[in-house]
Amino acid sequence: MSSSKDKTVSLRTARVKRAKASVPSVPKPGFPATRARRNRRSPWSRRLVRETSLSVDDLIWPIFLIEGAGMRAPIASMPGVERLSIDLAVEAALEAAALGLPAIALFPYTDVSLRDEEASEALNPANLVCRAVRAIKAEVPDLGIVCDVALDPYTSHGHDGLLIDGEIDNDRSVEVLVAQALAQAEAGCDILAPSDMMDGRVGAIRTALEVHGFSHTQILAYAAKYASAFYAPFRDAVGSGAMLRGDKLSYQMDPANGAEALREVALDIAEGADMVMVKPGLAYLDIVWRVKEAFQMPTFAYQTSGEYAMIAAAAERGWIDRDRVVLESLVAFKRAGADAIFTYFARDAARLLGAKA
Ligand code: PBG
Image 1: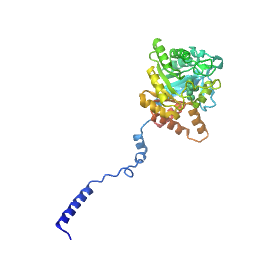
Image 2: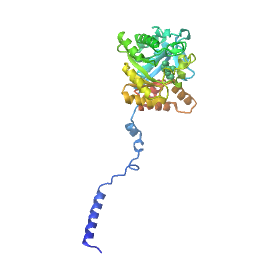
Image 3: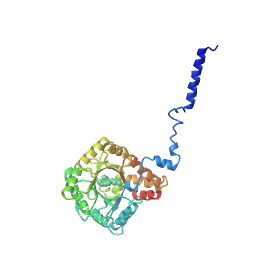
Image 4: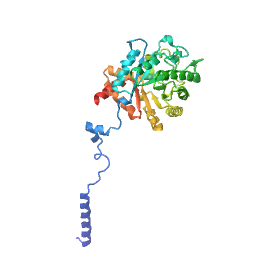
């Protein structure tokens, strides 16, 4: 049956077969050529392929202040966090510096007798927060200090601005906020962090700082700050929760909005913000991502008091592993694009990171 023609064909086929055998065939895409688990198999390999890392350099530790000496006052809704008198806040600052934390943030519990409709204590150059800044700067000059610019620890109605005829008066509030910011800058605060969400306050504060010789003072704008129920334990800590008349919905943002956050951030950058912040944290990581992508500015996020409380409470009950959840939640901020994170776990995280190194 075989003709010479058939023979030629079969020889050619054999040559092609031999060639195929000598070149390894390209695997088909997908499994098993691709096994995603290969890179995860050993600790050294996981370290090599890790995309983000959390470091002590990323953390800012918020500290609550009270009057007195040698005073520590626990906060019921924030187990493990205490308000500290200035002498103990100085000790905490020394500890922060020793742990390598770049900065702390100070929040005062103002004596109720000093709170009024105008927030006049906010302007007192010898108020609790200004005295604390001076004391800490004297002992720990290289530790960054962040101060909130907002009136809520000082007003008898618990609002961040002035309440006039039952409404927040934006422009009069900004005048007071500017004076508060100057008092804090004068005391030696490094970073002013307006958290009030009034319109135009960043520009007004920047102008005043330049005019008064504080051109080095940085502004961290709480640019996209939402009207959040996650702030409740903080309001216990500074004593503004029980005093709050109404809500903050006319100035803090609607949690349903994302594009508006980008507009808020754009405004604050245009007004002179050096850094911008998104707040709260974990529930708003999409906003952190969008802000970082859109503006490429130093972008901070705040793991709020309510987030702290949830983790601390669940850990107290043995429902979650506190240390692991703390590190996991903080690295999530980094993955979303945050450059730094305000967290009440800063000291714990710094210790954990130090122990790991
Ligand atoms: C005050 C201020 C708040 C927080 C930081 N600065 C509370 C609020 O706006 O009501 C929240 C911090 C936290 O919950 O940890 N303007």
